[in-house]
Image (cartoon, rainbow, N blue to C red; front, side, top):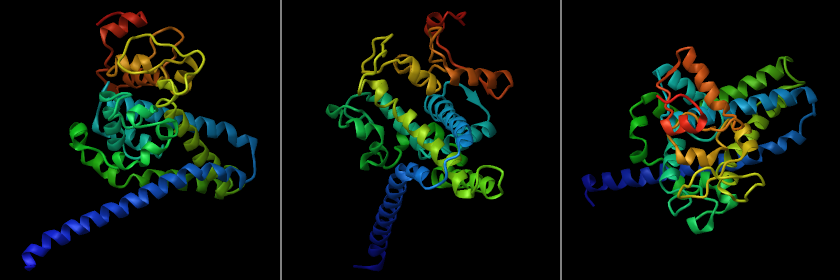
Length: 305
């Protein structure tokens, strides 16, 4: 084979090797991440750290719901480049891969919800199952990388592409900060204990609350008290408790009926914490053009635009 013919073949082989290496590292890290919660048994128990762990877990959930979900996936409000990057960094702290990958998977989910092609359906007929939809879908071969077709609007931003490549940086900063607080004696008794309770436990809480939207909020299994407010082409459900702890994402049937709405909770008892946060950010001028369709306004008892 001539040298000029060999070069493309070598390049292709090198590209495949790099892809396999990156995928092996990604799968290994994500599976190890699922086991990190066991470290709570390796450090001293300190009740005073439970409240900060719960608060940080809630902040991670809010970052995913407001950032990855309502902004990057559905563009339900607008913001400037600086705060857009803040939202991306914040959401990336939850260790759910990059905002580009997350938005791509979620847009596919809405296109094929509970049908073949859904990246994380809990139903076997759609290629999934409970464990698959709750955890394993994130490392499945078919979900290995983001399809540029779904996220062309987001790929226009080099800072988001940078986070796609270096998404571990925010987590290293987060975990390193937690370790430093413990090492200096400001929190807990040691750096290791602070990492477990200020980093690992909040990530564990966030992971399972967000994952519950792919399983429990799609009726797998159906929780007592679940209900549907709208007829949609999938099995999405609302649940008041799940909606509360997920910052609004658990009003999932509402969301699937009006995916582009910044407001998901519509009844007085459907407390939508992410929407309240969006409204607060709008008041201080950080976000703009908050999208609430007139049908949502009518169901929520708001004045129509």
